[in-house]
Image (cartoon, rainbow, N blue to C red):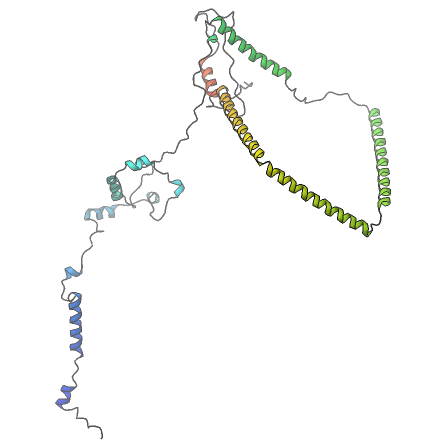
Length: 360
């Protein structure tokens, strides 16, 4: 059968049959999507779609002030830069007590009032703990004011006065003996006689003859050594080499045996070694304690060395037997209070000891 003949497209029947319905289908699809999504955006009011963000808006007064405010170059350099972080080592940590004492309300107000563009007073230390940690000074064992011996009083008892006087005499004699019996300094010049030209000639001649004799003796020694070497050189046979090898191996075995024997003896003597170690530790501990006690006793009498010169204690202020009158009015002036306080500061290690200069 052949194909069915198509009708004419020019008639009204063909027009109705070929009408497109794509627009209607698109409208239905769009309406269903809008219904599923909550409604059409074109029909929604503008208030629900948009809102005015007023969080960063400034009041009219603030705008005028900001417009009028002019910052100089020298002031803008001192402003905080939010992009530059401070060096961690330069920021001082706040103490824990102050951090615990700060309330949350004060933190909130600080955050609210903080403005990067605001001027910062570099001399204002409020709210910051910029105090440097001060080094605690070691308290000296020596008291600030020392009470002298009763024998140093203006009216002492006879026994106490004799004791202090004997102590002062012993110190002075010790200084005298130290100067007399101490090592003598090396002299800058050595005394001697002037040598004449004739004596210098004879001295040079004697030195030349001694050098010639030494050269002859050395040459003779070298000749005898060469003769001995030539006589000692002999041809070594195979038998001698084998003997040497066997002797060397035997000595090696004996050394290993002695080494093993020494190791076994050390293993057997482990308890004795442990006892010796314990004794050495005990002795070291006792020695350390003695050093600590000696250091404390030494600090009580004189301070640690601080400068070039050592501390020299002041002489004992004791009156002689003839100077004791028993009355303050007849007392002889011996030392001033300023000198006594200065020596006390030196003794406690608060200032560096100095020496009285001889120049004026």
